[in-house]
Image (tube, rainbow, N blue to C red; front, top):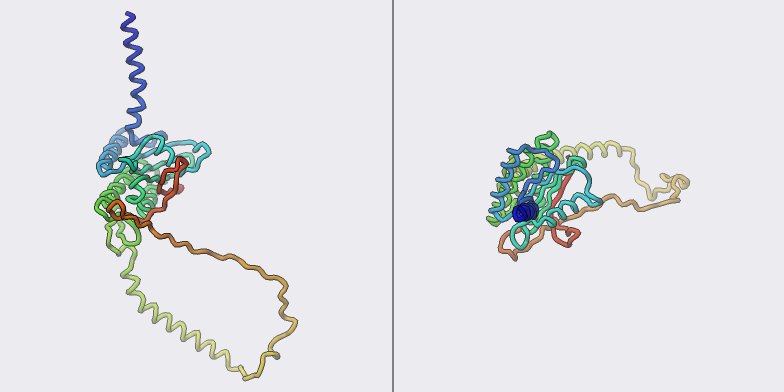
Length: 279
């Protein structure tokens, strides 16, 4: 009896130690209970397929706050603390959905910073936020993984999906094309714009000339100025706007082409890319 009791206690301890290991294998953590079991199973399969391309994709849904952190800090730390990522660079990405704060945020790490560029993250957020707003949670997560796979394939082929050249039809961006940005239509419109501008300029010129019929030649302008009409007693410099230009990082040390991505460091000093918005 004593041996049986010892065996049962040992078995319970072993199972208790094994639980975190099994939990760490999950890539869809639905803390907010937005997804059905069949949706979770399907998303896990998609995430497993993406892992084969060298990137670990994590979906985290939650409620509540971030414990004093920003949404980006929370997402970055969650990715690091749970040991996610492929290879020594810990390459991958995490999508956080917070139903309390109405936040959706995508954090990237390792080669994921350059495979999932600022542009491709914007595309993801556009589509995902629309679906989340419509309470289509399963569809939002499915799009995230489907598009992430397209980005991973493009990166592995040496052509990460990036601005400014791309054709986007809601699910696919074809690198190297220009129709989405309307470059051809812009060039075609230049002659029309020049003609319209020329006509408008002539109208303004003739209108101004007609108003100058009373102009007479004068040696100075003293007779046109009232000496008490202008009194400068105060002046100030007002900053109106600034213009910032971001230059994409050019790093061919890995042998592949890298896209334009904004990089920041987590509280642990690890480099991450990403972006987010409200929905």
